[in-house]
Length: 264
Image (cartoon, rainbow, N blue to C red; front, side, top):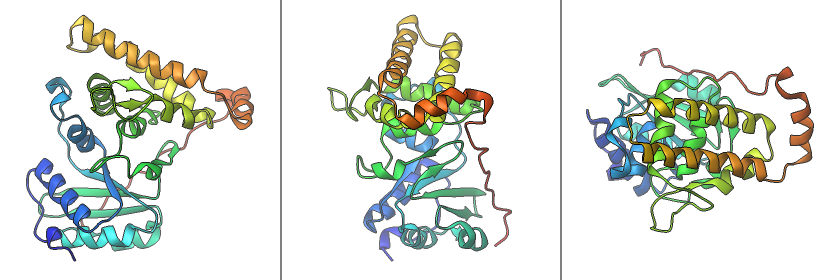
């Protein structure tokens, strides 16, 4: 057990995220932070305060077969493993609990599956600490019933990161990789359809943002760039066949909500 993993969870969730990331890095576990805290850390001072929100829990993704190593780090860091849930679901999902602060850690193993499966673990090595901006945005755009919290997270990324065909902008800052997104949607009509629906929702909600016209225009341009990249990407045969069916057949999965009951 790495010494970096010792101790009890911190009350401040941002401090706690940094503590766990340090422990994960020290133990050389292939895992990265996702979710609202990951967006906050990735954007740093490029996160406009209007998009800040309360974050209740932490979410991670780790490589296949790294679940046991990550479990060792998290248990050593003061978390309780949900042994029953983890025994049944550990090949794809793990759950941990911090009883002192009433918080939960959800870990996706080997991939990300909610409304749509996303091969996010392929991109664990692109940057330290968190997944890249494109992957963080996709975890939001794949939500069929996009709520206000997730909409604000998507806006935060689109406001704070350029949309280009790479993971970094010309100035070296994190960017939203449109080519990566288009490559995935070109293989899956359902994924592209959900992304397009959510980009339309973001366009419609732009007027509600407390931003000046130039900032709204910049976000609108980035939304348009993502939509164009998806539209222009060459489609697979499977994509074209599925597109003929359209919404007559459900194109997404109902996400599984996992929650610990608080028992030890």
